[in-house]
Image 1 (cartoon, rainbow, N blue to C red):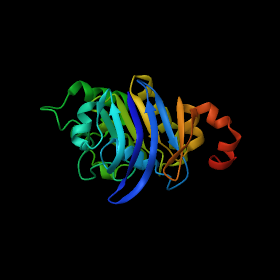
Image 2: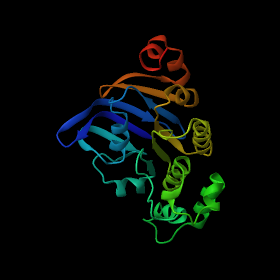
Image 3: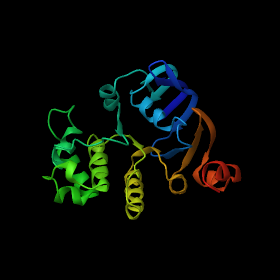
Length: 232
């Protein structure tokens, strides 16, 4: 579904990624882990057209999307949930979700109902301002908005960041459910051990370059990976 080949990218003249190779198959769950500053989020932003493209290629379902704008990329079937500032705080929950379908002539009510089925609390609080909700609830709003167009691939950047410890497992369960219903996942995650336990495959990035790639369980069992990147 997604193929990143020899990607060089960054911000302005600053290159962050060097010769990145990465793929996500139809319905697959893939996680990117690595130390701070490794370029993990830059990979996600590059797929969604938010960085300076410097070389290589990004193809999605056979179409070249390198260099396209985000509003063009979403029409190909890619959704994106950034780590920070990922809701419109002054808008209601329902208005935030409706913004996820802004490229359509009208809001797809069936998609909205599906979001409410996945996140029942959003239906209960659909008239509440998103900015007044807890961090975990805001993350649900952001994920729900990205799912309004029923994307083939959902990009999640650090979905557990800032969540209370008792909410982290719930967030991972929700990501699992989204994947189990057919949406492919590409996720950057600080909770590397839990992410690798749940995903199909993982990539370890270091200083903007590929270091390891394998099944999630295999990376967890690799002594070098555990020692260098997972805290033993």
